[in-house]
Amino acid sequence: MVTQNPDIYDPRKILQHSEFKVLSAGEKTDSDANIAAFYNPAHEIHLVQKPKPKPGPGQVLLHVRATGICGSDVHFWRHGGIGTMIVTDECGSGHESAGEVVELGEGVTEWKVGDRVAMEVGIPCSQPSCTPCRTGKYNGCPDVVFFSTPPYHGTLTRWHVHPEQWLHRLPDNLSFEEGALCEPLAVALAGIDRSGLRLGDPLLICGAGPIGLVSLLAARAAGAEPIVITDLFQSRLDFAKKLVPGVHTVLVERELSPEQQAAKIKAVAGGELKLSLECTGVESSISTAIFSVQFGGRVFVIGVGKSEQKFPFMHLSANEIDLKFQYRYADQYPKAIRLVAAGLINLKPLVTHRFALEEAVSAFHVAADPAQGAIKVQIQD
Image 1 (cartoon, helix red, strand yellow):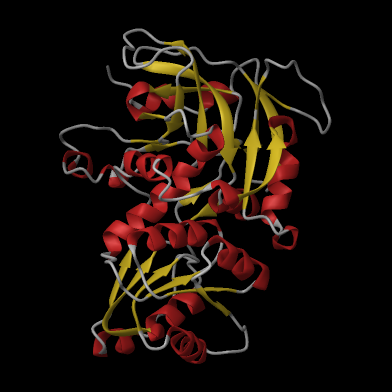
Image 2 (image 1 turned 90 degrees about the vertical axis):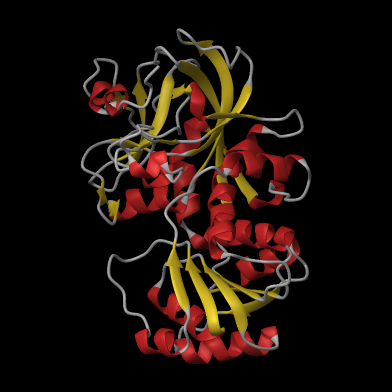
């Protein structure tokens, strides 16, 4: 059954539906109403009410029980786009989700009502003519439907229809909260894989936000040593230290050049680093990572940033430093679930703030304000 056809998820079907409406602040709805958090080109974040979907062939209807707010959600709201992905209309947020199967579409045999699942939200075309899909790199599919990336609506909603092939069963010892956190963990695991991190590698992680912290947990499980993590906020570094007591922390000082910041990092590490996982996408931070690694080292950029940036080209060249990048992930969810279920990675401390679905707008404001001290904000229903 072809559930990868983008027409199935055409956002206009929701926006033009007679039941779709933007809710005013404080407006009450029925407990069964399909409410969701949407952003728009005017940089507004608000709740909407939309029709409750019906699963088609090869699809299941899910009650979304937990959704984390990602930095990209905040970016789409505040800045209206990331690169070529532009918010041009009302667009539903959220892609870090887990939920419960409540209804089956025609031909669904893998799932039953009541099953608990994590949702992989990048739905590729899966056609043999598509080179990324055919070669297993489906994160590069040009026709991917990635929920919450404009124009497609996200999973921060009460009821969501999802293709059965892109759900992952949650073991009994994993909560919905942990299931939702498997999405940022999938990002980190893809970085660990593609960066070539090996047991005992000296590692720098730039940025102690959610992706940096999940990368820290994954890198520690993978055996990196020593690990240095940087951030602009001491509170986040303190959090990292509680999360992984053996990590070394370095506070980023805005007045220092990348070379000076790198000198601090190498002093703390006791020498040059073999690898850096750059989790901010900020130009100065990427340059700092470049100056921190050894001859023949690697800088692997997970973070997203400005469309055009400047790098110390000749330093990269003269030191044979490999600079690589990542776009989402492929085939990481099963591994993420295994690692969490086995206790090798503990994601529970990352959720610092929890909100009901009806409070999603407040949740976004907390997630967007560094002064609030949030690491991962989740909406639960």
